[in-house]
Amino acid sequence: ENASIAEGDKPVVEQIVNTLTKLSGGPHKGYRANHAKGIVVQGEFIPAKSAASLSSAAHLQAKASAVTVRFSDATGLPTIPDADGNSFPKGIAIRFQLPDATYTDIVSISTNGFPAATPEDFLGLLNAIAASGPNAAKPTPIEQFLGSHPAALSFVQMPKPAPVSFATEAFYGVNAFKFTNAQGATQYGRYRITPINGTEFLTKEQTANAAPNYLIDELPVRLSKAPAKFKISVQLADKDDAVNDPTVVWPETRKQVELGTLTLKNVDANGLAFEKATMFNPLNLVDGIEESDDPILLARPAAYAVSYGRRLGQ
Ligand code: HEM
Image (cartoon, rainbow, N blue to C red; front, top):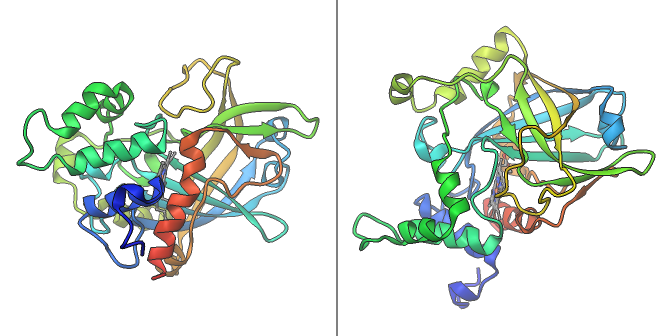
């Protein structure tokens, strides 16, 4: 694919996928270029009464929807240990089955914020990491990049504790969406997916001793005993909040609207085949929810499609 074109002349999203692949020692045939290691579970979503006040979307009205959820570790390395520092942020991808046999997705991470405001900057960050091997001259490319990109530095420095379970981690939509209700009123907001029993993290010592697959192994055991529940809500933008910049964290004082309860019931027995055949996409939207003009959000479908095409061997 595009072998005769110089790397720097390829579309930025393709360059990002190539650098993600290089950073993970890939290509790892049949796996995602990012968030390669994951687990697929099934459950349902029951909307809260407040959901319809925000959006007329079909899954936010009175009725329950079937959902499929994929939790994941960051990087393109399918064998990354679940407590490895590079496995953060963790990911959650949620697919809601809609009444008309279509679906809509939410794809979120375990950090409230992103290291770059544009795909070009994200590529710059990844390329700086790739150029900063053990023999790189000081200051290394990544030291230089972080020195001149405060948002990337604060993302790198953000605490990313290892969760006890995928079911005890909180996730953030990071990119804003535009929600419209049945009366035509619009508001911008960011998703939050929060465990109903609260977040729970390992101690430093537990993290150091965690088994390589401790998260992947824990979830089926947990779900065989009881369902795991999350609250899905939306943090609303104030009129001056940046709705097109995922590096800007909005104040915790912003109002939140509860959308409903996500209940996870069982691990998908066909999860491996499903995850290979499926591309989650944050712009699989539904009437009542639209994208913002955040350049990171808008770049994601094309990047995911490059990775998906390669996963299917195209
Ligand atoms: C320009 C910015 C980004 C790029 C280039 C990028 C790239 C990718 C790629 C190539 C994949 C693999 C997709 C597939 O093969 O199906 C992926 C997966 C994923 N990304 Fe991103 N990403 C970006 C931003 C984000 C953001 C802002 C979030 C969360 C707010 C996010 C969360 C995830 C998650 C959770 C997955 C795994 C989805 C799944 O389980 O299928 N990404 N990303």
